[in-house]
Image (cartoon, rainbow, N blue to C red; front, side, top):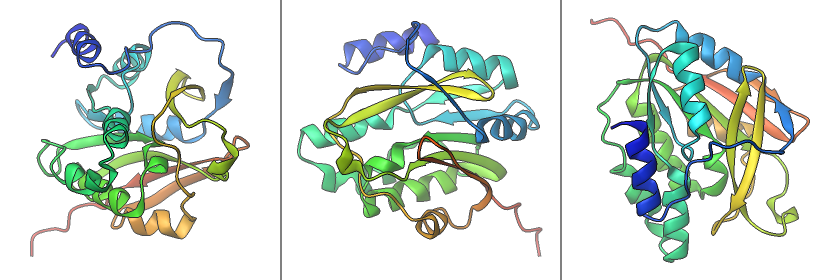
Length: 221
């Protein structure tokens, strides 16, 4: 599907239009993104799965930086729909059949902060699918909030817009689902087993960036 077709479809089905324009949002550092790009760029013709909303400049950035094919699956739109319809308890089952990708076919996954909006059952279901579709030695980048979500007056989602390899803009937009209680570090590691944490950074923005890698496939016996 052409990128322009994807934009058009998302406008017609009621989802937020792609965020492609300039913004006055502040710029924040990212330490894990450059390492994610290095790992992704070391693979031939990599396939990148982006779980955030469509951001046109991000699509261009990743295509130019690592020459990858990009699949955008806006899970925040899925979460929002379930929240508005009062069906959040159905998210675990929804995630189990949400991804058509075959086992071990994706070279990199950008989760952004989607896990912050999920309860434990939904988070576990989504993590299982991410582990399933990753190739051996492929990488996954996820952000986790560490601040008490009750400090936010109004719930928002965030478009994470790549400025360059070391900086991002976090652009909030209205949400029907607020962030849930932050996951502890040990819970994050257990959630993504058997993926291994290769890099972890706690930023001044209270964001924890975690880079995971799937272990190499065991040689045939």
